[in-house]
Image (cartoon, rainbow, N blue to C red; front, top):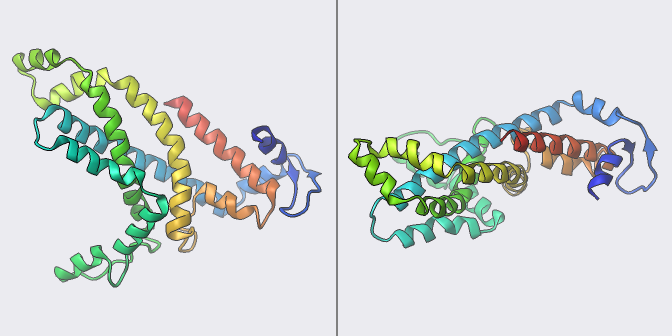
Amino acid sequence: PTFNVFRLSLYQRSTFNPNETFIGLENFRMLMNDATFIRSMQNMLLLIVMVTVFTMATALLFAYILTREKLKGQDFFRVVFYIPNILSVVVISGIFSAIYDVDKGLLNSILNLFGQDSILWKGEQHVITSLVIAMVWQAIGYYMVMYMASMSAVPGSLYESAGLDGADRITQFFQITIPLIWTNIRTTLTFFIISTINMAFLFVSAMTGGGPNKASNVALFYMYEQTNKSGYGYAMAIGVVIFLVSFGLSALV
């Protein structure tokens, strides 16, 4: 099936008709002139960057606090942070759609308490930010637990020696913790980039449907739409581009 994606991208084939016509790179030429596809790729790359940065930074911070600081109820916090990861994307989308509701949503209710006007959180201007918040909330717990496991393996004597030499907690974090778990960070980054491409499709499907005015459309969702519009050939050409982009980003990491 994977090789068939590359083969079909060179053909013209409708969704309900098995007849195939070889057209070479015509599908890719059409893609380069497709404004909706270009915007969907831009949205996908924007989500990859924003969700990855916020998720990894927050997960590392929480993992370090729960590992290094002697807090009461550490196991409780681990469970609480991990809960979003076991919820269905549809459930999370429903929760955040309720939070973002214009009239009765939690965010606008808080704004109204302070005399501020309601914001259209899933409107064209804020929809990407709204998706980022939901996706980061869903992913933090999983990566936090992974980083906690790595940080627990760092010898405590290194931190004690650094403390005696006058290094504060921030210096210890960047000079000891990050270098010693870097292999784990690099591996999770690779997985996360690939999974974010898929998760973006799921969240867009459940929360926004690509709207409003294609403002939240991402490449996989657009590919899915094209199977019933332009046919399998054009959709598979989009799939090839997504594959090359995700492979390139993973290789870069």
